Image (cartoon, rainbow, N blue to C red; front, top):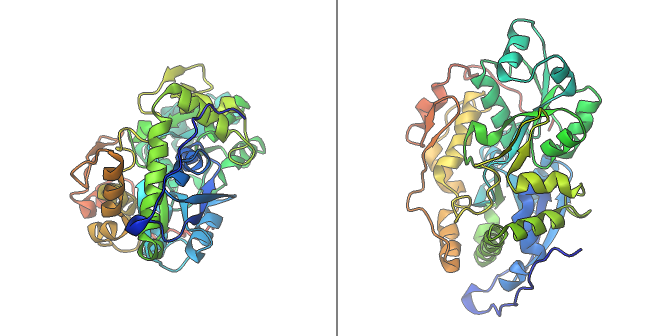
Length: 404
């Protein structure tokens, strides 16, 4: 396969900065946003920083989590919320100190509805809300992990349409690559998933894209490079070298459209996403068509680098997921939002790696965002933020064991 990538020179890494562990097992899921991990492992970036990355494709987020916790994987392409759930001891496993080394991407997830709903004219948020509230339809929506990003985007979007995600609809867990098959079998009415599986479902005639995650929160945090904190403590040089390698790969991918196209071709291979190039490439390039006849170039499409803005592990990003855990009853009490984020987000290590590569770093560990419902998030009052929503489940216990 000719992916048009240049060969990378090998670096001589020695002295105090040499990685303590040079061969690392890295987990990933078959999603477009694993791109920088795959490129780092296969195109010379890891070797340049003294590492060999052994990529281990996983079939489910639960399986990836278990191998990360057991130490079978050194680090992984990971859901933001998965890392925090393990750290906080929710979601079916005992609490374990975890670490976010860097962000891997922003944006590029999507909510799709089934062809059956499309035939009924349910092609807008308003039509969906009418179906649920006026006609009493009890729909089933799939997400990929109970504490993951897709569950949080789906819940947030439904709530913004006055649909309670825990009372008005059923929520089930389905691995990303199986979403279209579940729609075809009639087991689910819609889903939230990462690319290329939203585009793939549209291409197969298995529904349409009703909303993108970037329409919920432009430039939202998405996947991260996660690991147990013991890995950082035992192998700090390896952790720093790993961030350097993946950050350099992220920068490389976004240097040109040719590099993006080469990345799409690489990802389409059997070892990685094992699906058609066309399902990967268009939305990786930011070109969308929703299955309803609409086409557009998305201003907030997949960002793997964005001059480092997609990679800095902002404290406020980690805190946001905890506010949603509290909002939906996944946490029974408020955590020390800022304190936990400071434990998990490896800001100092990331800044060292970024500085060594000449990648700019925001001076502030917080960032400010406006979400689709007009609610502002900047991390300044997480306790109040979690309680400020009209729809929530703060006084309920949500069973996060389902589907794990």
